[in-house]
Image (cartoon, rainbow, N blue to C red):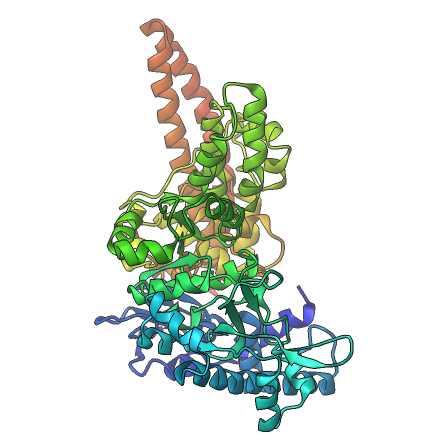
Length: 639
């Protein structure tokens, strides 16, 4: 991370009045004790569940799960990426924003001028493309839309247009409007031949404008209306300062509100698939721009969705495309699912014939992408042979390595191992995966060498919950001791240092809290510094809604017990809980495997003696620190 960037992040957080900034968007925000409450601006609700905690500089909604710092709030409210939100706040607060690319102020100003010119040229070109279609100047385009089932209303919604069958019609129009040929080439609307001649890039094509989430026309996609041997069926604007196709998603500007409300997006391959999905009420549909889904696009989706459904062509090419692109979704921490179509169908033909209801029904039990990839690749090899098992492991290795969330990765490896005959993680799995497992953080071992059990938080199955929500009920289902421990780690540097030194990984059981607790204990530096890294990189170790909920919660003991003392008390609770669980497990094993009652009794006696000594030593160590803390607190009170 650029040191200048870290400084600005910290300065912005310290200088920004989060209550005042949030209040611009939440008129119902009212003080409630140490925090403020109001109606969430990101989803519809009758009872206020949106909290702002000025002392911690964070917000969290216990209805939809939105939460984070003041930068996160501006990102969501203004639909900006992290750098854009940081820049906006820095400018508002008078904080100098260093240039990450080392440009001078004059160079930055020049780039901004060029960006504005490209946006203006694109906006004027869109008007021209649209008029050509509506007025029937390109008759082929006007006749094409009804054949594909696209109504005038849908055409208007997507601002579909048409390019003329001409080498310079757009160029001449834009020149008359006042733009230079250089500006047209820089905007990607025109090309320049070796002889210097400037010509229209889009000719005799149906035009699909491509916006960013702030409704700025960044570029265009064009579908050929006549088959030509040396001309591609689809053509996009060339890369420009404004149009970077690896960081844009078609129709996200039209669908992000539906995506936020439902918690999921539908990922299609092409423009027409998205248009027809929206026409049938699936307004969460978006598409990458012809080059396959990129990590940047996946992270862009993660700003609005928790789950993504693939809706690709049902043929072999569509299946292979899903196999290639699912890694990016898993890497962004998204729950990726697969909607299956008949081999002869694409989303367009399927929706026109069947409507959306079968797809909505399929969503209820849609196959996870990882299981889809595992099933597909397993069908390609002979799992009855060692070579076949190795081939499957090789095919699945990139997918396993791509998973950013630690708990999800462990589950993925377990599923793969079961498919390969139940190999163990510690030995066969690591060798089979070529050391990939070792390059990722694995669960630490207990003193006896066994892996700590992976327990999930009790509660309703994920499928029964409304997508994207993280309610007060969800928060209450988190392990009470562990969520308090995480809060202490986030708020106090001395408590964090103590927990790093004394906590054992096998004491932590909650699968939602575990990634954040491990991220803080494995990292170096203060919690704020580690969270800055998460913000800037976008590589989130766990569910960010969990983190903001933990930070927003008010702990009754926070005022009466110093955080270091609270950390010691919490570790004592976790130690005692772990020891009880281990005791119960071993006693059950003694009863199950002992050959005689006498043998079981002898084993139990030996175990109790050994276990008591180890437990007392560990407890004494923790209590010694806790006693010193109480004595120090009593001394301060007496003074």
